[in-house]
Length: 176
Image (cartoon, rainbow, N blue to C red):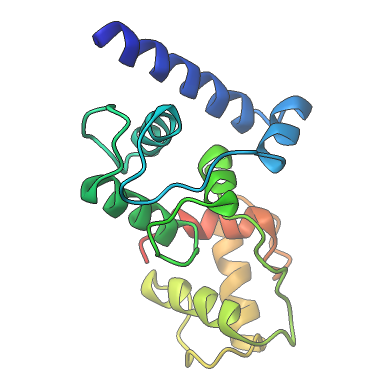
């Protein structure tokens, strides 16, 4: 059993490492992932792979047994929360992509004048972490721009005031 778990771990880690290095092959694989939809009650090799990925990102510490139970479901929900996905505990294509990339996927690019729920998410995360002091109103105005630039500067990102993939990724690492 330990050998099987170790080889699964090695395989998942190499996939994740490859993806993290942004190699062309890894990015193509991550964006075109063809995995089954998994939910509580699912079993098999794909669930083992899911368990390994959740372990890699620090959300699952149970047995790598290929059984999608309540503990795995809660780990999926925790990871979905981190990457700003609907916390339904179901692993579909977007959740698979986020698991392989370690970052939010399919998030909108936000800038001055943007509005909506995604802006509220940004404002809330920035407020919880001491970067934003305005109302959570869903409007990307001057106060949000200033907060985003301050956050970007602190994260070593280009302080352009635009929330794109790198800023979304950095935001996903903050408590929220």
